[in-house]
Image (tube, rainbow, N blue to C red; front, side):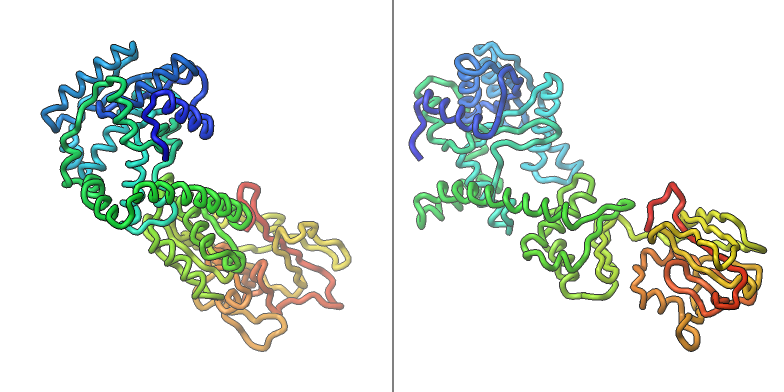
Length: 483
């Protein structure tokens, strides 16, 4: 990459990057994070020059005092003086990183970042800022990509930091992400910009410093352009990751359905996808159900994917942690926040046919009507309800509509002998999560005569000698979605 030590060339590059990625609009308010180091000092000066010469911008200079080094006070004063020199609002805060580390059980780098970003977002909200400008540069990007690579990242990690990313309704923008640190140092020296040197950057105690001081120089022995190669990898991975995300979103909208807080899809359609899209789709579903907490655990995603691929044409349940479960019901895969609760047991005894019986335990209602065999039945529902007709004179009252019990059997029409209701459900491939919402109807002799929507028994069949028909229909109440 050519040198951009010249201030005008640097501004042109930043303006090009801003236009390409939509980093700002005229009159936007931008909070600029300024530590006092050469990178952030150069960023504030460049944005200030752009706002004066090209695009009017309202800049807010924000500084975080970590209070861990002797020079922290002087760094704060340096940034304060810089803001005054440029006639910009100045905001600062002193944070207690060590206490936060103890409270949250986090490492120093993560704890410091959390506190720093919380402050920047607070300032952005106070000023109604559209974005927070960060001084991350190409060397930072190379270090980030290498860190992610070493811990076993996918494309999402290899793309490193994004030039523009939304966080808490504010854009995080990195105008320098394709500029190398040597250029920024030259800009400061050539233009007389005062900056501070962070002594902690010289210690390999922290992971990022160790990558910068030890790992990258070692790799540089084998590739003198290692930083440029890693930045190029980030650009390529970023574009390909965006493409894969689009493909995964299309697959999500095509295959995944929502109902009652559950997401479900058909296994054959899922298995027709490329393995890469299978993983992306599972990740999208888990993130949707995890209330904004991004799930990137490859082993968890792969466990679900392999279970769907290996355990075909069966039913199973998989606890995937975080209060989530993945359930297979024949060809349907459900992912939900918790396994479906079993419905409460219930019993309704009917001494005679009633026009309508509500069953609130399952969100259903039973309609009954005695009529001539020549009359039209209820049906115009086109499958929206479960219906059956019986010879009314052959039925023995009271009829009992109740929840299913273990060991229930029925003499199925067309079959010799009795069959367990459980086996009837299995043969009909009724999903286990649905079975608890299907009642059974028993006559006064204790014979099970109907499983609505599934099967009816051989009892009280309508024939040529039938003079009176009991027509029954079980349907959803208005407030409940259909199964």
